[in-house]
Image (cartoon, rainbow, N blue to C red):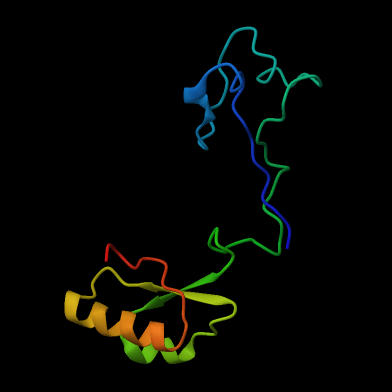
Length: 114
């Protein structure tokens, strides 16, 4: 499976607060990254697209399937898909979904705090 490219912020090696995963476009007057010089690190542009193998997948590598009740878990392939419990599901039904998912070895992306 291919890996998604990471774009690092300029001067991230100098300042620890720049080590976050978020990308901010450089706006400095003399910024080498903004000017797209060969010696500078790459900047995200239209040409960089996520590889086809991982496009649309969750960062864990699973395809997300929205689950509203326990019957929706039967259609999930535990090897390639993971469940995400819908936000409208209440506490009692959420608990039932989690128990059935544990029985069938299905990964739940938003388990909540247990």
